[in-house]
Image (tube, rainbow, N blue to C red; front, side):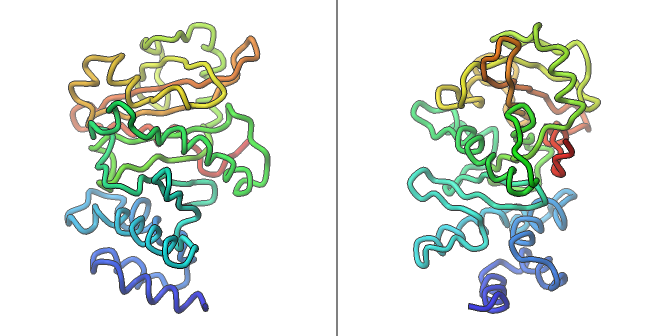
Length: 270
């Protein structure tokens, strides 16, 4: 069917608050609008209406429904019904991994429950999409994932940002690599202008490690106030050649919202 027909149907099925950005920008690609209006553009500031903060959830519901009825997860890139997530492209080299069940955000206790789905694992698997978007095969230490704190986000549906780690962040981690251990410690310097705690995980994948649980179990203050936490996962190749990850955790303070997303580069400028 023609793209214009899909666009009309998609807009009709959204709430009035979610429709507005689509109606005022008819020349953009729908796939970028579908999530872009919800996350990056029209909702960049504090959302005032509940419909606006739930726009991403509406999009995911549409994707799941379209996958089930037609086999085409429009306007998402992928929908995995069995494992319960959708993948949306929102920029040049920027994807969002979103659960297809209702989960508000980093503070949601179901993310740390025994047997909980490991959405970080699914997001890491989705990094191959960045190769196509950036036009190059990225190494694992060029890829990063991030979840913002409740204070920094504009959507009340959990979403993991998938992009490249900023080159300066990557360089700082490589310099400090030998001092990063398997338990949480404070970085002695700021990254992106903010202080972070850091730890390392060994392993090719995140199958055996749930970063949400590692954060809550390893930092008592974080467990007591998960909503104020931001979490970043950076791929790593350690000095001994083994594969793994660095976990970085930051916390909102006073009027400064913790946004680990700021450590990512959606242009993949390597």
